[in-house]
Image: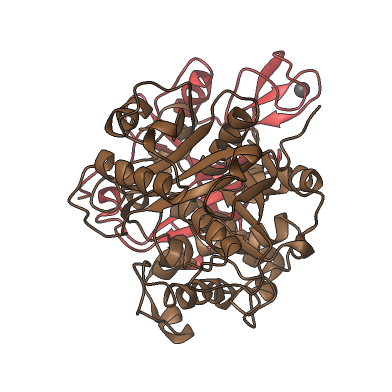
Length: 136
Length: 378
Ligand SMILES: [Zn+2]
């Protein structure tokens, strides 16, 4: 048992679609129809050309570990009972980065450059989180 | 357009003792630091007509004014978010005094950062899953040390930076703290072996890589260059200044690769008309040892990727090529959100430091990840 939960996402008007699609086990990203740039987290405008002409595009869900850190001390109550805890930054093939966790992977085996693909973890009826697993 | 160069000066500095449990209110410590700074400038509290604050500080400007017996303020302002405000506040104060909006402005920071809400545990910075935190906090990215660790791990991967490089930063600042009786870590030297054997907190960051949460207060007084000539101490002039707020990354992407420092450096040095080679002493905001290496790169003291080897061989220690954080910095003096580094560099330029850099004429200080920076001259 863990003593405290990590905060759950509080979806808002700009990112509700992302979390709705996660419930369907689909990872979607914002893409600009004017300049084709992908962006994440979801925002109402393009980070390159400021256009609001954006679409939701399903990601292939494949990428590599760009960087990671392993928390080894109970620096806050949320970590009690779940150390060591690894956080990864995954760079997707579409070029955007997602903060996430790896499932079924010993933290000591994580390496930068490791190939990963998305999996979905259902937390409750409202929230499903995209996580990643190693691909061999 | 008239620039701010040499238009204003820091003329008084004040600090309380640094402790782990002050047993005092943040207001009472703020008043003590402000009174000390005002007296250090040879002024009376009633000479102060402007106060600017960290948004994060619990003490309102009006409360500080009340406790100093100042009936009203002609100028007041604030700057957020969180820790990176100090240099930007000096810029606000410099604008105010050089344009006649105020005569003498107090800047302060008072925090029970150890006995009260601790930055290191995430209680100050958490967003409860709202906004872009919806994409970071559910994965257990909760405290500032983890973000610095993500950057540090990437730097190691790209450039071959090692744990010993981060250790060299921690050791340099501890060495400086051992010369400084005000430092919480005064009298507690560490070796590289101690460093490497220490508990890993946010792999690759150890306890010695993290800012020393502390209780205490800092303040200083900024006045116009014109008035500064009548002040009892040698004034320290604000020769260069710049701020940078990089577009929000939402906790991913480019934030691992750059910082405000890389954006503001050209304006900082260009405005002052100097180069990194001219700087005699540095006061970097070191919430983590790892940022010292990237800041040395971003400000141009070495090439990108060369920060690791640069900090070796005592280069950033007193007596080295460019001494950094000569009071011990956030790692070993106290974590006062960049204020105590400014105070130490003022002291250096007055010739009053416990770790005095011989004939120091120019100092560089910064805030946060390069949210703001100043070049100070004696
Ligand atoms: Zn666009």
